[in-house]
Image (cartoon, rainbow, N blue to C red; front, side, top):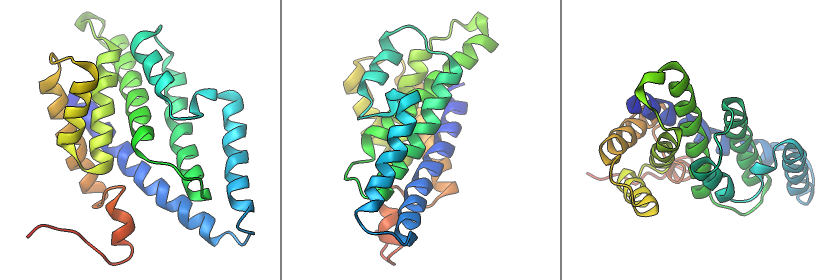
Length: 203
């Protein structure tokens, strides 16, 4: 099950990286005054936030709710995943300063929780805990986005102090990163350099 989550995390990470640069290109090609571009991005985020206010800000409150609050419906988790991905790309493409690290954690948590809820319903005899899948999803999607598996593993262990899922965590992280690299060679950080003809590779 954790390997399946790793494959999904790799797929979403590749889409996430592509969406960020697609949005940057789209806003760059938009023949509008420079001041109007962030205004347009802010309007889009504001409209989305009317129905899903969880997409505002960093998203740590939502991640905490996934871990410690009542179980969220799977459709809500999937909606948060899709809208956060699109709105993050829209914000960064529109010119808002911001990072891609925290959104990766948000996307991973919602993906993992939705996967865990689905597995719980399909396999009720396995005593599946969706928050555990949310933790693994966070590390897997982060690693697949930035191509830093060791960082993602150590970060999640440090954040949770839970060593019971270290082996499935490592498996999901490695699978996610390898699958993401198969779909898209560059990480969210190195793609910008690659588009300028610069590649940092070890001999």
